[in-house]
Image (cartoon, rainbow, N blue to C red; front, top):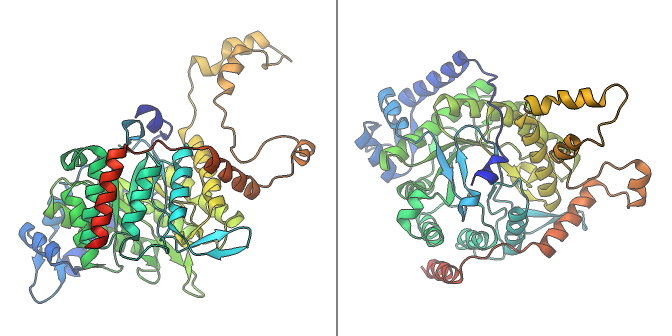
Length: 483
């Protein structure tokens, strides 16, 4: 665990919001929860909340949350959690000192670079991206990246998770689950991998997502499914998506109030139902184009909203996940890289723990194999920047400086040989002079990314699941399909 997690270690975060800013947003959200309420379409959730002291009416799905109830329930959520891999080597402690990177899900199309257009995604895209993610050293978590249109709607989520389990040892995140039966099937599958349901409660091999419906609504079946996750201590990424100006106020502080109220309401539901269930304050907040109302995923305002959500999670002492990629660019390339770099850097600066969205531009709707590789390069560079550098007797190199003296060279020094290995070497491009670059084929980053993708798929063989475990998971999937 230590070696893999250690590569994502970063310096202590900076806060770009004052404590008073955070307090004001928190207090405004509590006011909303007390006096406006949250529309909870799950009868099971309303029942749990009523028993915990929330104000629940038999005549309305709207629930109001007294301040003391919110404080009590939120305090039951763990402040730290470990997202486990298939093996302990890939365990990821969420303790406020790391920044991890995950792919994103629900892509409804795939960018075909040869045709210069989009195609429908298939299950094979999940297998390929799982293999690539298993190989790439700075992909921390794999989330099935597309909706497999070659599988029936009922079973595509479960099939996607099965393929993911077979093709990577890293932690898995399920995004698209909307029914209790889907959640139960995936819990059974994950339990097979780790050795039983009780072990799954201790080793959080998979996590899951619940998206709120801004402003202030929670879908019934999705919330019921999330309660299955909570019962089994599958960490839940509570993913608010309030778009400033449309489903939240156009002001950034106001949008954060909406998101904070929605997020805390889900924490309250899950803690009322299953005290101690691990929660992640997960937010993917965006701004709109004021001319058209369209999505602007990589705009500066969206970046500020993401960093604001991270800081609000820390204010409540909850682990966080955040949409730190997810550019609004229609195609992979320059715009996506610029926007994703800006967002990822700001998320790292304020302490984003699970940074979501590798490889899926246009608001996380289009899988691009090239962008997955380019975003991985961005992640590597961001981690290098926010890890910082050490200042000690070895790194000061005073004795070497005196030895080389005036006008000398450091190339022949063992100190140089030892520490040059710490330099980050790009995976997709080189630093050769122009003439050498031309002789080597003038590969641009997009071409290099495609070439690297092919190389990974041709050569990388993920460690397979134990054959008996794989057979039992197959049985669970077939049973689910028949139900």
